[in-house]
Image 1 (cartoon, helix red, strand yellow):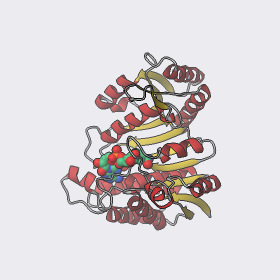
Image 2: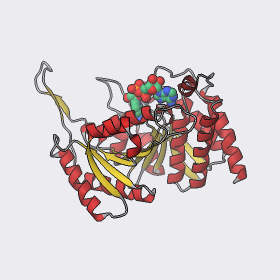
Image 3: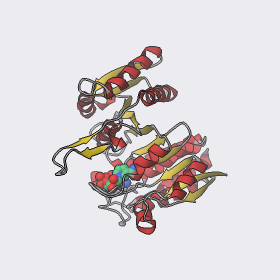
Amino acid sequence: MKRVTLIPGDGIGPEIVNATLKVLDAIEVDIDWEVVNAGRKAYEEEGNPLPEDVIESIRRNKVALKGPLETPIGSGYRSVNVTLRRIFDLYAIIRPAKYIPGLPTRYTDIDLILIREGIEGLYVGAECSLDPYKHHSISIRYMSRDNCKRLISFAFRYAIAHNRKKITLAHKANILKETCGMLREEFLKEARKQDRILAEDMLIDSVVAELISRPSKFDVIVTSNMFGDILSGVIAGLIGTVGILPSANIGNEYAIFETAHGTAPDIAGKGIANPSAMILASAMLLEHIGLTEKANIIREAVKEVIKEGKYVTLDIASKLGTTPVSTSKMAERIAEIARQKLEES
Ligand code: NAI
């Protein structure tokens, strides 16, 4: 039986993780979960938001499913999410976003994959104040050629393996000539070697404008860390709710699967969070460990429940003008449909 690290997370984390386990149980996924705590809970109980047992568990198991973790704003401990990506060298963050029929959105033809750099850029946390009064501060945007090269190579391989037709690099190499310039150079070098996929590079501001006015123009987008974070928010808005956007942090040896959204403190503890992003993240995990058929069953079940529109949480029900159900009710319906699909298969 495959052993996988499970981090319930903060805020809505435990609610959506429990909901996800219901779905995985329903389709008899054979995983031995090793549960460890990180984030706010671990910080309050152990004085450390990333205890050693979490790191050891992921090192042993190589794969983890993680609920969202809180990062204090302005001061306090550093982001556990960012630290985990750095420790396990998770240099590519994959976020697949697709229109789901039945969910009211501005566009119905969105089907794209965002590949965001995961360990460098502005996220290295190299910041300081230049004077004792904190009137002048700097942030360093560090990028290395080796990492740009492997990110770009990964993005092309991923796009081709998933039968994608086009890959777009989103950058700002007219202003950030060294960092974005280096990423663009590596992109153009790789593009020249490929004839199986169309490659284009675009300034980040044009990418945002095009995404909002004509998202079907995009297929796979690859970009740096902070630009990817912002694009991910735009994409979440375009597909209707951040509650359906999963995320995979991938390295050569390790992988951590999570949601693109955070701990949603405004709705935590109310049992109303959409569990779909976490459930879809678990499908990405299953695919990663070779359980592709079960991964597809989960994806189809989520799609069907949203299309049906009767057992959906507030974020979707408010768009449909229907009565919302709880996180666990939506998960139960997804589990029920997934189980039926498994029996039919
Ligand atoms: P957020 O994504 O938690 O929430 C933004 C908005 O989306 C809120 O209105 C929230 O209610 C809604 N939302 C998020 N997930 C939802 C779901 N599943 N169903 C329905 N509505 C949902 O972003 P925010 O508020 O900026 O961040 C809160 C905390 O989460 C911060 O501490 C931040 O650092 C952390 N965070 C953690 C991430 C991770 O662990 N990968 C990713 C992003 C943020």
